[in-house]
Image (cartoon, rainbow, N blue to C red; front, side, top):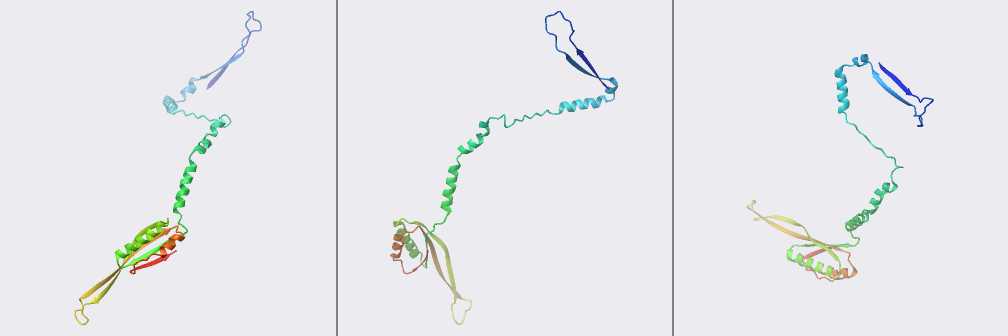
Length: 202
């Protein structure tokens, strides 16, 4: 068992020295009896010592908000205020404006059996639109439509001998954005070839 001993030093009532009397002090000492130490085996004591020595000592320091400088607390807000947030918002607004389709648009669809005729018509339409400061998109080539006709070579014999006739229809698509009254007048005055079919959608 552990024994506790206390030693108290008190000043003497009479002293010839001019020095002030010393303050009382207490000292404690713990002593373990050999019976108490003998109850724990030496191996377990060495293991407990090694475990306590191997365990890392972790320390954490916590500071209250009252001790911190208020300027340091406001630093993240100042950093966010100085960041370039308005530029990103402007870029996003410009991109959204580009993605918005225009309210006024003229779509012209051309069809023809001959490629030179439809190419000439597209050139005339683009020139008329650009002369009036209108924005154009195209011409966009659309898939060519094919119509195949199978005809017998002979009306009475040789049923396996046949002819295949084909008609190809070429198509082009042109978009005129933000048209004006002058643009519409110039398009109405165009003289396109007779072999070109024009379809206009507003």
